[in-house]
Every structure is written in C-alpha cells, then in structure tokens.
Length: 204
Image (tube, rainbow, N blue to C red):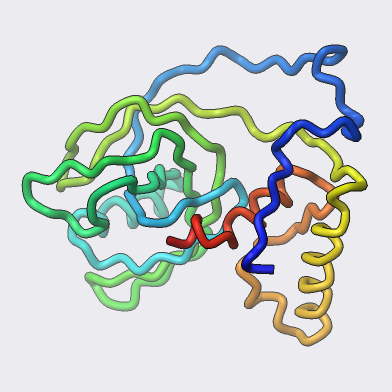
C-alpha cells in the first residue's frame, strides 16, 4: 500500500456530482497572516502530524496555539532546512495546510510532544520574518474538498485501506494507525489525502 499513489482528483465520469448543473459557490478569499512551521514533509486535511518541539522559536508558538486553541500553518519546504540557519530564507511550496493541536505534552520546560491534525489548505502568497524567528505567511484559505463518492473504478483502493483499518481494530491497535477517525472510506477527497500522505514523495 505504501508504494501506491491514488490520483482521485482526476476527472471521473462516474462521479454523481455535476459541477455544471450544481456549481460550487465559496465566499471570496480573504488574505491574512499566520505563523508558519516549515517542514520537509507535507500535511493534508485530516492528516496526522506528530511533532517534537525543542527550538526556542517554536516553544512559545506551540504553547500559545494549544492554550488559545489556535491553528498554525504547515508549509512544505521546497529548498532549505527545517532548522533555522542565520540569513537563510527557506523556499516554500505555495500550498500548505493548517495544523490543529489535538494532544500536547510538556516533557521538559524546553521540550514538547504534540499531535496535530490537518485542517484547511491555504495558498501561500508571501513569507516574512516574525517575532522570535517564526516565519509569518500571508495566505488565503482554500475551500474544503467537495464531498464526492468514490467511483467504482477506484473502489479497490478504499477496500484495501478499509481492510487495514479493520485488521487494526480487531487486534486492538487502531490507535496506532497514522489516521484519525472517523474513516470516510466512501469519500474521494479523504481517501486521496490518506494515500497521498503515504506516498514516497510526501514522506521525502
């Protein structure tokens, strides 16, 4: 399963949704500034992201986000390092994802373990330095994936992942899966995000 990629975002004639007959309408995008957490791996909506926080610039950010129940932006590094390098401005991909902290553990005063869940995607327009060395991004959020049922031609991928989840549940180890419930195995967007996260390019 890890070596496969599921491209369910391609047009499918088997979809029951007709965007010409029922066009999707979204509010006009509003540009705003968010704190960024550049990483060498991507985050997807509803995806799971464990982090170990020890850099001084992120300790205050993460603790504040957890206490105030605020999200931060995960930006996928195109070129550069996760660790801050003086004078270096990281090159980031233009699409990122909001991260919401679900679990927070302060192991030591300067070492946190957190578990995050992906929220909405955003389009990154500009990056500027911010307080304590935390990069600030000017972004507009991207609407949530429309709910499109998995077409017959792709059902085998849903069944394969469903078997993995069912096996873990039967063995009592479902909490160890890198997937948050609920499991929307009948939704194209959710399924695509899970498979894409497991692809080699998303982990590199």
